[in-house]
Length: 253
Image (cartoon, rainbow, N blue to C red; front, top):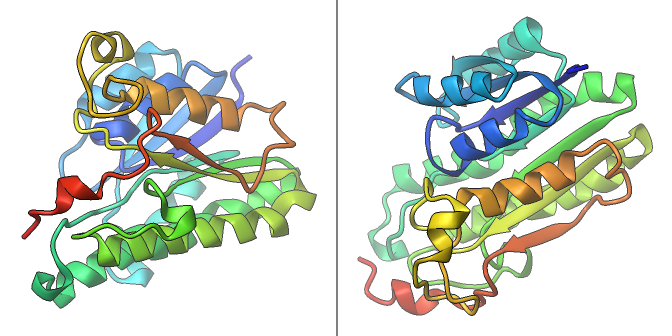
């Protein structure tokens, strides 16, 4: 029987859209997704085709905290309680710090770090009550090591902060049967490409091919499985072995 309920943020398009419909196959009764501007009809259709109910909710994580909190509380009240959170929102501006505006900096911090905190605050109380929960956050390649990259000063700082938050949260919530883990995707440029499509293309990774949304979704599905209660506080890179991508940003504005 399908009984689980998941909240996947930022699933209008990109990696999160693919993740949402992949995990919908995993005994979920309902997958709720957030979007910022356009209603993601294609994502909703894919979730339903996978056998789960679906709902979409507008949440702009760069808006003031009280608006975001209110929106999240309404989602939890109407479609929760959620036993799974996949927080994939993560705005990025690739630009040297000297050319980065205060607004761009603020939105990257709000959209990456503050959004993670607000989502956790919204979904964790019922997880604690039910003694079960699965939370997956997204870092960036190297964020667990504060690895530097040109054009990423604020983004990298925000993602490293997300990773530190998640790993500390994992310690605090483990006694409630809640796991908290982080995925660090590699340089996945085409976020709609399937694994089969990626396997016949050349990519600048040690693996020799580009990454796909299915590569990332597989790891999410692994981490949110009920039996995965002993994997928490982990940071898993899905990178094809890519270690240093900074040279790609050498000419960033």
